[in-house]
Length: 157
Image 1 (tube, helix red, strand yellow):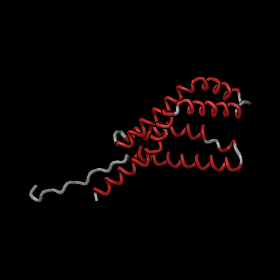
Image 2 (cartoon, rainbow, N blue to C red; image 1 turned 90 degrees about the horizontal axis):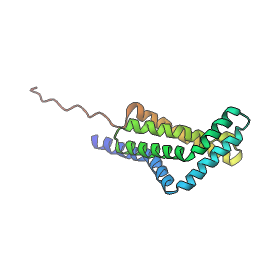
Image 3 (tube, rainbow, N blue to C red; image 1 turned 60 degrees about the vertical axis):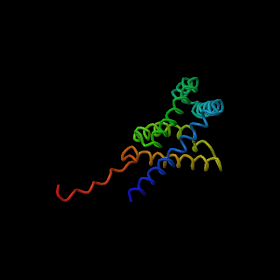
Image 4 (spheres, rainbow, N blue to C red; image 1 turned 180 degrees about the horizontal axis):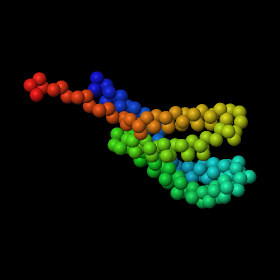
């Protein structure tokens, strides 16, 4: 039973971390494209929220920081994914992934601004990310390792 539990834990860590590690590697390999996508998305937000002085000024301040934001999010994604995968400080890894995923979900999957098939697609991505955050919260609360079963006591001890 312990072998099955260990194998399941390893496979689960792999499944959870795979999407983050693949995303981080993709950003690193296609940095310019990732930067352009983030810049375009932030510009779209600025257009959507242009009537609000606060958001306009905030986004005007944030847009020049796009390379730094992308670097930090990629580091969170890569480090968090590795920590969860390896089971080393997996609670910290899950927390880093939550800090990456929550703003990314809100910024990148704004289903409330689009219509038709695009709205459905963005809503599915949004809800999928919310579900992943739920799984990450479980890791933060419980970890992925199980306590070892108690060793049988020797009858004469």
